Image (cartoon, helix red, strand yellow):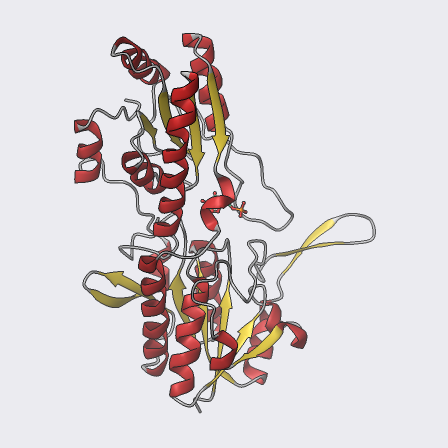
Length: 362
Ligand code: F6P
């Protein structure tokens, strides 16, 4: 019987998550279903206090609000929970059976799981165990091959572009090189879009191993042409030719992925050493994940939420909603998570960058 539907948000937050929740609540309620939200990923299936009834009144006004009203975590893999015993040893425990039996006992007929590839992988594993799951893709990195866009990306790019715009005046006043590190993991989408739109001189992306000689040549060339400041945008996952992606280690206990970062500071130090040029670096970091979603992201997120409810009604479980313009489609979650979307080096955006004189580090 279709009566109760569960919704959760997992992994790093992204502007637009609340718009998905809004659409699911509104649309499912109109079908006569009750909607429940699970706090912090699967928290609501472990502790009643973390399960919240969501009525249309509860979601009024959340469309422009960043983050997620349900909270999120990227160390919440129920198939591998690290538990510390009294001796200080860490044991990995699988609590997925408990979560699944609570889901069934509570009478949900569907779980709408909003997440990035990590959270969707967990959702797929639950689907294989018998939980009827619909996936909704989310990441500011825009790196899921199965969907043309993920919500959050447009907002992150706007924030990064705005920051780069602001750096121009201070860099120019001091004749400095400003190196700005942006997010994106192994894909260069945020760096490429914001760097081109923000008028950067150099953009370094993971898809093109960079040469510091090429970077310094571009900055020196600017000097020759009487431009005494330069803006360098570096994706956190970019690496020099033959070099390694820089990381800050695993971060919190129970987290699967390493925390990327450090390349911006390193590039700045190299430029300073090689050219003797006053150089500063900054990391935009989580500013890119915060704030109100742009209109584009809101609309996409609302469409994802409504499409997820349609898919629940059609019982298209273990599938993820995807946008392949101009239509909303669905893909098996397993197919969606195994393919990362990289910047196509022959694309018009890359050509545009090169043709307007931006150095891509090669
Ligand atoms: O995947 C989204 C993202 O913001 C990446 O761009 C970034 O590397 C990572 O999450 C940061 O994660 P955390 O919130 O754990 O610092």
